[in-house]
Length: 258
Image 1: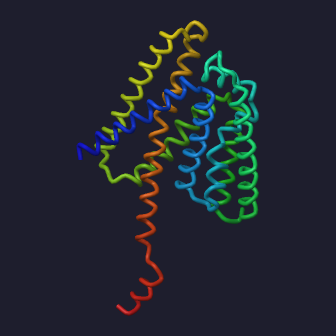
Image 2: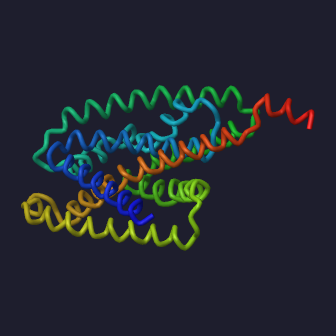
Image 3: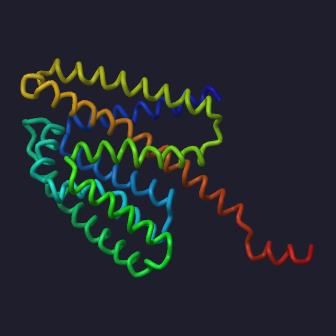
């Protein structure tokens, strides 16, 4: 058991360190990878917490809702992206990739809404349309960082907590201990990275607030990468167990003679 814990923790740290290295070496690539991971992670969580069919289309449409800020408030979003990659980094390639991601999301969003409008007499479709309408309004109206903060800390985190609770066999005490451990790791990571960024001179080109924003989001992306892999792996195993537990037609027929 100790070996397993050490192995998982080491892999977690290695993936996090790899993500930070990517931000330092290829920041534009890291930005695009981070956004793609966010779309997949948010969408997978939403779909599994409230499944409504069309898995991949639903995952793209719901996972990319934060991109509504990019459509409606691009003038506010672009400076934030520049802070994340650093003031000296050219964003041309990243912007092209983000625009392609926006097109893919827009098509999936329209298709998803159209599908559920067609089935609006069904309760789940009606609830999903209400949910998407609320998220669309929040991201379209609120400042980008405010909308993302509310989405991540209120909407996504509460749903994600319920999902992880369902997937995990761990006790509440061990789950709390794990959460505290990884939170402490994230805070240490943020502190080290902030000091590193100051030491390499970014504090001279960015304000302290901008530097904190850059370090905070990069740290979140670094912790998200291994977290996403772990949750996806556990979720796949859980879904397979559920499928194996379902009675097959053969089992049903056999039970009639018992």
